[in-house]
Image (cartoon, rainbow, N blue to C red):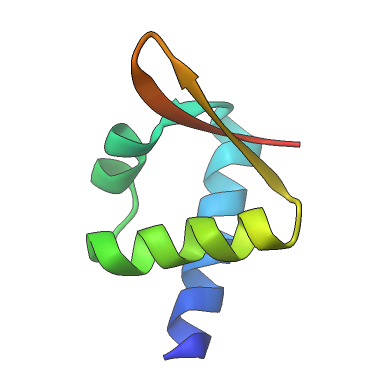
Length: 65
């Protein structure tokens, strides 16, 4: 399971690097994985200090640090 989460975290990082900040809801639609795995990938990146999660216009938004 950790391999899948790690791969998803990498996919999220690459998406953000290419496209910039995005709402978490939109990110879930863009990444080809289930929502729980994407949330775990976001947590992985947050734990490593690679992403910032902010509330912008009432939407949870993720961006690279």
